[in-house]
Amino acid sequence: MKPGILLITCIRGLIRNPMRAFLTVLGIVIGIAAVVAIMEIGDGSSKQIASQLSTLGADTITIRGASVSTGGVNTGMGGRASLYATDATAIMKHCGGLVVSASPVVRASGQVIVGNKNWSPNSIMGGNEHYLDIEGWKVKHGSAFTRKQVEDSARVCLIGNTIARELYPNTDPIGRDIRIKDVVFTVIGVLAEKGTDMMGNDKDDCILIPWSSIRTRLMGASGTASLSKGGASNSTNKASSTDTFTSSGVDLYPGCDVQPYTNAPHPMRTRTVDSLTVKIKDQTVANKAIAEMTTVLRREHGLAPGILDDFDIRNRQEMIDMMTSTADTMKKLLVVVALISLVVGGVGIMNIMMVSVTERTREIGLRMAVGARPRDIMFQFLTEAVLLCLTGGVLGIGLGRLASVIVAAQSGWPVASSPSAMALSVAVAGTIGVIFGWYPAWKASKLDPIDALHHE
Image 1 (cartoon, rainbow, N blue to C red):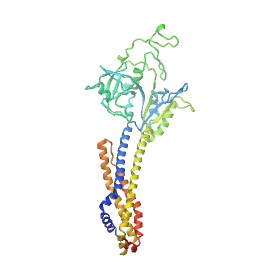
Image 2: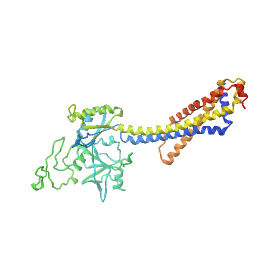
Image 3: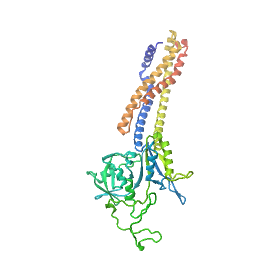
Image 4: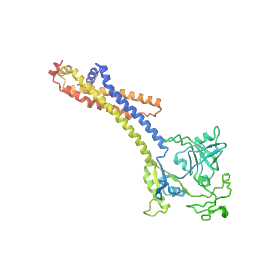
């Protein structure tokens, strides 16, 4: 039988009972709609998660001090103060082929005051002139701090949008003073908004300062000796015997310090930093970059072979991959559930096709009597099953698209059009038609013409 005639014959056979044909494909329609909607909502959510995670920096590597155990108590990661600002310089110098930039990172906390307003920021972070680029910060107004300001431990800072809104309502904060603890800084820039992270923390509730300014102004103490690289500074405050511990020589009552109102920084108490953040050229070279940085840091710290690293290097891509894989796993699980409904719909089509073969037994016998071959009968019923499933697939795609748009409008969930889901749906629908339509078609092709003509 010619394909055109076969197709017309199948369509005529299906439209004899339009309601039954519609109810037959309803299971396929629902299953395909579920697959399309879930895939589109899942793809949209994955893209939103990827967008949020991109702010973490897939091309960013974090280096912290290793753990240290004291008296049986392990401090955990970062417990050892073993990293220095010079380590960032060494990494940029010796890993230049893989590393774009590196910055020391120090953290502080405390109350900030502007006039009669005060605020406790979520974070006060310090870095060098590369820090903003590494962490993906953009300056909305003003300018970022420069290398010269980092070297001079300048009293300058950049504030997040939350700080600007709370402490400088209806006022341009650029050029104005802000007091952090007891030190007055000048606001030179306002950071672009980042919103909240996945944990609900306000990323705009922050202040960024040159790392050296935190070390020498917020954490330093006049007359305190440096404890690590860079030598020591001698005490300039002379204490009487009554004001000093005899055994340690620590000055209990130092003289009045006007540091908050001068431009001269304190001697640095310690030149160690809390961590290092490094931006590499591409996440594909992360492992090679980590190996080179490990070699550089061991040499800088004078670690002999066999001695454990006094630092820990973490690639943020590992965390990003873990979180995105969790989202993908949930999406796949939902798709499997939707595919189960397609199988149920396929069983319904097989059932209806079996009923159709029984009802049309005399028709089958008559066609065989006038010359139709068994394979013609088989192709006819198999084509009818495939047509039912493909029709259900097309209707299901439209219903799934409509459902995803409604969900996006009502719930605010992100939705991304998924051509792959549509193609998969059509392919699955056709496959189900072939699988579940084959047995009824085979059974119809095996009928005896004489018995079929005598069927009541």
